[in-house]
Amino acid sequence: MNDYQKPDPLKRLNIWLPLLLSFILVIGMLLGFKLNSGNVATDENYHNNPSSIEELIRLIESKYVDDVNRDELVETAINNILKELDPHSSYIPASRLQSVNEELSGKFEGVGIQFTLLNDTIFVVTPISGGPADQLGVLAGDKIVQIEDSIVAGIGLTTDDVIDKLKGKKGSKVKIGVQRGKSKKVISYTITRDVIPLYSVDAAYMIDDQTGYVKVNRFSGTTYQEYMAAIERMVGEGLQNVIVDLRGNPGGYLTAATKMLDQMFEERKLLVYTKGRTYSQNDYKSTGRQLFPINKIVVLIDEGSASASEILAGAIQDHDRGVIIGRRSFGKGLVQEQYDLSDGSALRLTVARYYTPSGRCIQKSYEDMDAYGEESYNRFKKGELMSQDSIHLGDTTKYYTSKNRIVYGGGGIMPDVFIPIDTTLFTNIFYATALQYVPRFVYSRYEGYKTQLKGYKTVQVFNNQFNITDAIMTEFVNFVKSEEKLSTINTVELAKAKENLRLRIKAYFARQAFQDSGYFYVMNQNDPMLKAALKSVKE
Image (cartoon, rainbow, N blue to C red; front, side, top):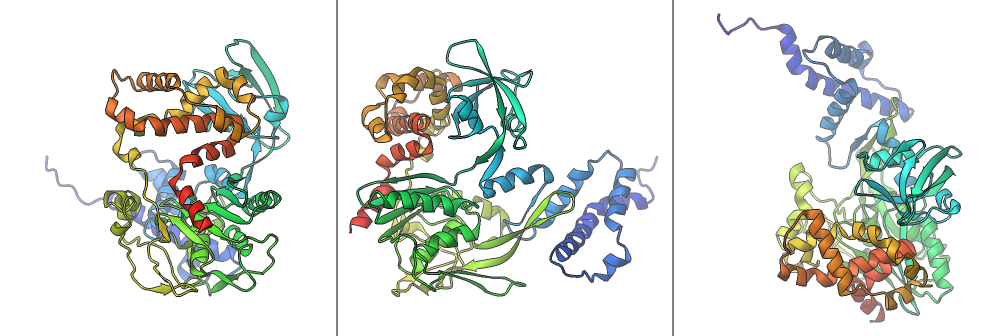
């Protein structure tokens, strides 16, 4: 039989269907955006054939050679379209939209615990202070073995599975069974779910008599209120200067950053401005309504500080209001708006760029999407994270601060004071491996130290009196060996990693006793960036 067959029109259609679907979906989304904005769509082709998308999907479902998942087909087409735009325009499926929105809203509805999965068992890391679980007496270290009438230990649950079972509408109830310590007895709690805050300020405390430290993990709908509450409390303790730690902060709401900045400047100072192809320039300026006087400001940034973090750091730098310490920030200067779609999903579409007061757009190039995704790793490979001399910016255009200092855009905020990264994580294989087991080790050993930890009234007392002994370190190394199924450990690497691991283990014990603020207090004791910040304040 001859292998050649007459061209089949349906076969040709199968080849071109994905491209046609992507094209038509673009038109459909654009129409939806116009309707959401109150504009009247005028695309003639769309109106002449308003059911093209539905017809095309039905044709695939009825004629395609294999079974297809309609939702997956649509999601794949949309994601492929967005890849042609920029790295930060994104499609959010309906199944994920609620959790994504919760991260920025600053709250969710549930029982109010932080948990981890250890050896296929749900461990309570800490009940959220004042939440439903905390009020009923659920304790850090408790093992959740039942949810409703189902056994949940040893059945292979994922983190998402646990979240689905514990989260729910305010006022709804969920029954859990916990085991405490070495007891096999199951204690039952019926918890009424409530609104649980998601804090964006991890820690805020006085470092010395005049200087306060504030760690902000993202810019959410509650960040400004959290920040101001922390500042007000520390002003009562003598606050005059503030260190704002934005390391690893990926950004969030632009207005959360500008509200914080508003408290740092006199009236009518330009903080940031945005503009896009269809968006005219929008200036964000300070109001001059400063509630608390702040003298010196230091901002800590690194390669994980992005978007709203860079807006805050850029304004401080351009107006010479304070000192930026750390390493070059991520380099995200694009602004997204969220459009809710009719099926419950949403699209975050880049609509503008933002510019610092001096006129810099710090967005790094995304002409090569693959290179964009690997850029942070390439910084390490090229030596940039270890040496300021190895930094090569994509844009060498000169911009000028209020005091005529030269600054650059096109690739992030360059710090005024450079602090190299600790290379142990990259060069010490044992340290990189062991690091992931520190929280699991502490959670599994917490019960044995609970009474001792309760005896420390403040984190300062804990830090001075609680030590990670050699015996604890030996126990930890054996824990790593058993988890990794290792017979031996490189003794040279172990010796180099030991003090860093000792500090992290102590910090996680502090988290169990004093929540996130305890963790950062301990970690900051040996932090070169914070030491540089304090030196800058004194000078």
